[in-house]
Image 1: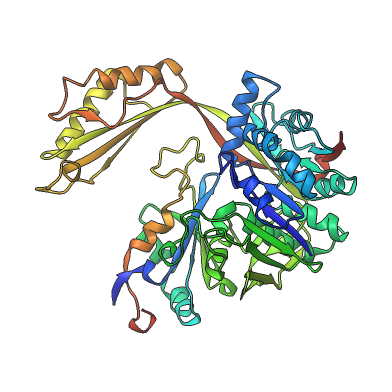
Image 2: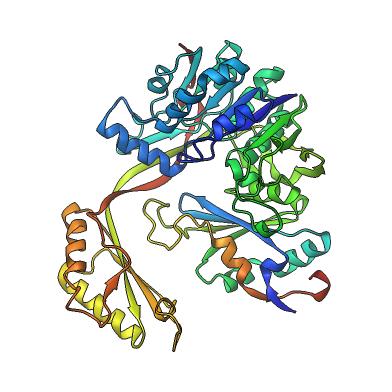
Length: 106
Length: 401
């Protein structure tokens, strides 16, 4: 079913120098199994076209994926010309993207 | 077990949090984080104006209000509010105070406005072992504020990697204050976050902990709110710190009647290098936002761009057109797009001239010209970068006053 990703996933994002990090987590093992297959680096870049160079890390113990978006914030918060220079709302942007979610997870 | 609370997640956090934590229930240690990467730049500029400054002034106000209360209750205070001048701050406090120094590496990085190594927990532990009631540090890792008191309390060894890692996780959960208790939380509609309470970690001898908060405070401590904070500002699962490498993929979280239990955390030796936070002055910046309403939004934007480029040149200008406008809108605001422009330049006069150039367009530009707020004189901006030095090159020191 087409639904915003945030229907089943939480997220928190922030800055580390010129990089942004974006953690995404879900609340059941079934949802995590789906998320790991669905939210690849390529998929993230498709959903957030401003992302260029992305690393992905898995934290199955937290049912979470952590993405580092390298260089998104230029020379860091004090210098960045980007809207939301600390990437505080990057996660909420991702949660608002409409994706195909298996019906049994909703 | 040692009860460690947090009363600040940044320089500017809720001023009354210190009193709320002291009066709300039992605590052994109260910590506060005041230093973001950006804060070091702000304090660096304070120190340029007055060399006796360079610390977080709000902490001093909190101590004027609460130091006697803390001493009376036997609660020790451990904060990084010393910023670039821990000794200066320590000397203003009327208690048995220890401070941590040695993080300042400006001599090694002379071109930087601020250069500070991220120190660890052991100098904090040393101050506490010597009987400090208040410990003031400069740049230490945020989690060290929690690891130091736990290590001192239990007498941990420097190679107790799993214990140190467990306390580091508790520290990471606490370091952003109410972000652990439902602040900035994706599922905020499920709990009451009108006024979230500040978090507390009850740490056991083995480094495991219970994350909780005082009874009667707002927000919530659940596996979800703690997970959210664990994911904040991290990279690879091997979380590098000055005292231990913490393996975030080993953390176990369980709901508990008073909050969330954290256990199972594994640690391994830290890297040989310490991270250094460098801020240099990058130049001057200024910005404004033009409101473009109704028809021909793209053409209106193009006209302003051309006009501003003619007036001050296009070097260092960044434009963003946010198409927040809707066609045939029922409110003026919904009919409007926002055109943001920012200038970054080495020349303070040009940053100031930007304002004049933008305002001089007021009667000479697109129909419906207005701006959301008049631009100011421009402000200096910093460039942040991380560097790494061998730990032998840094001599951290615990000093008792």
